[in-house]
Length: 222
Image 1 (cartoon, rainbow, N blue to C red):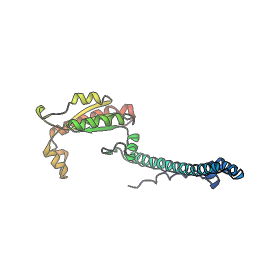
Image 2: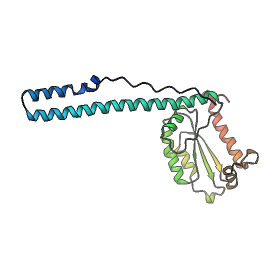
Image 3: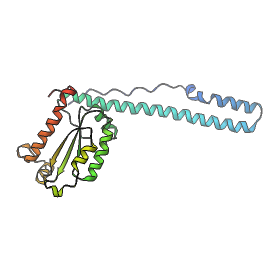
Image 4: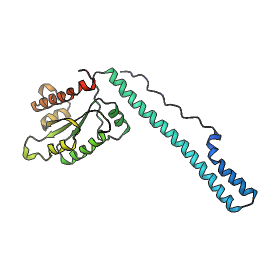
């Protein structure tokens, strides 16, 4: 698959040497006053001000150029994702745990829907609840999935209803049962939906139904 080239980095604003040195003009005037009246105290103060203003001017230019590069990189990431969205019917991006990373933020801002996955460990559920607060700023509808749920209530350590209350913006909650044999087939690259565990097939159909329920409001066609 070939993608069109992303937008080029916008050129930084052109700054001449005069523009860079302009902030030190006032300090130079004070330096001239000190030299004219042979005032050593004023001379030291003026030299210090010239140095500080010059450093400030160079740092400001560096900050501006860095801001331009960061914006260009963010625009390129969003452009790449949007181009893929135009070329394929369904695009799924796994952002991992680094939700604050630039690439993950670009995916969140261009997504139609977000699936937030937790396992049945209470410590993971706590991190997921915190992630939900961050994802709230992204905007798209959020669906919560709890993976590796033990089959026995005696082995269940997570409070599903409590997590649902913490992630109150979720449009739906789907539980995927723990199945070590099925997980082993996935890890070995031998998994197919023809022999998938019945609980997995049911949970995935539930997830598909939850996601599809939001499509009319999002203007997404099935």
